[in-house]
View 1 (cartoon, rainbow, N blue to C red):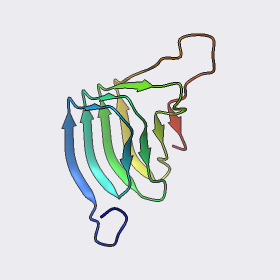
View 2: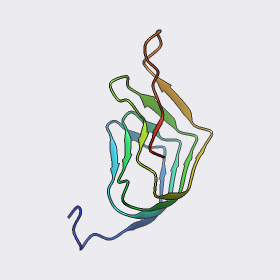
View 3: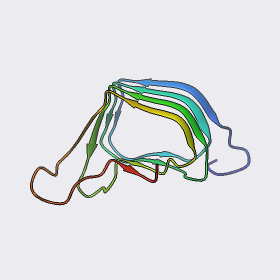
View 4: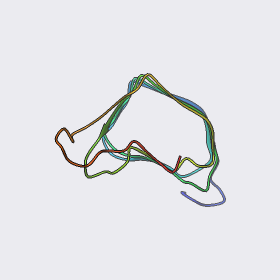
Length: 105
């Protein structure tokens, strides 16, 4: 029931020691998320028209594939989004173009 009037917001979730092998999409309003000790192999994509607040990304590993330009996208309507003690890396270890972490934040 994605993007319908019946959808409810999500609040106060703790995701600890998870592995995300593909992109993670946030389509609805949400608040109070904790991501701790997780591995992200895909893009975190937020809906730029929705508000997001009180997210904490702590002690995570973000792997940016060169084919994916950004790791975290579309957070302009956010409030209190924190990235604390995370590791960002990519497979672009040569003299190629840089891998960027944030887009429209």
